[in-house]
Length: 436
Image 1 (cartoon, rainbow, N blue to C red):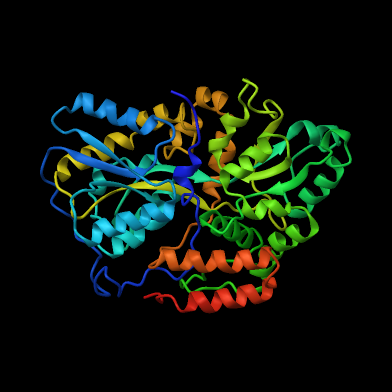
Image 2 (image 1 turned 180 degrees about the horizontal axis):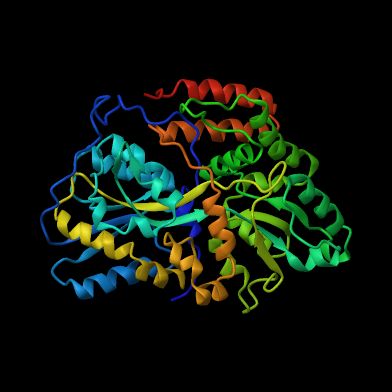
């Protein structure tokens, strides 16, 4: 099996919400009623697993292993488009029509609460899954109003990729911890003949889910918040402005190249891998691609990862990842529960890590010496996840992320000032459903 791009499956997985917490008065039930009581999980037979397109071959490989062991309870893989917005829309459409075509859903972690509130997915029997062995921030993403509505399947944390060879040649002993240090390091590196024509930094800045992630990380890394402790939008603040000013100002001063406002994950990965960038913010999936010794990577052996930089010190990643959820309208739910346990198991995640590097959910996998030796990014990735800013449970996630993308992109492309973009964003988010 070849290792290829997994980021496409997590693009949303990488997303960060900015909105009030889910309104309990929404379709999840009354103010004093949980969004769903424990379900009777009965019925055995064929089921489906629904997720974005598998570009690695690992999903089908895991399903094949299950099908060999359970010939009377086979799983069919329903592949949705790579675009996360399209995935979400198709899952919602299936739920609204109460179709049993979809059984187990691979939900971006930020969607879980929305699906729970609408009763599109079942509340799960918590004691059937080893959640206590998983990293706590990851487990929090499956909870809604006292219940568990998903099983963590994978996580994700942003990291700073950097050119170790160029920093060393420029006399820089360690990666930057702040935005100012990163810009200063870039200035030193770009004086080297070997860095001629290189750009400083890129992330995911195209108007899509990745921009929501990068915007939220900038705000959080400047001491701001997307929502306050009561769940209300809180983006029209000096701290949020410092975060957005970093992004918009970096485009203006050339730290972020102009073409990077069109970058999604793969655009940035290719730019860094071809030697065009000194620093890049991305997910763990690209580490083995950069390290290939077959000639496809110009930076093999010349890079490393570090925590994301922030305003005054290390920044905060957004928490990505996917959760397995059970469609409320599905049949053969006993089989579905068993498959979810199988697919999310530590053994399966260890197997998948070898072919589709991402972020495991089990703490033990980050402590395994053999895995750390093989995947040197694991300690940095674990730190990224443990210090990630939790994403709010949102009621209308699509509306919230669209508003964020609109205003952040306007500031980065210069059509609005950061101040005006944040004022407009605050107004847009306040029109979303309020917290209970």
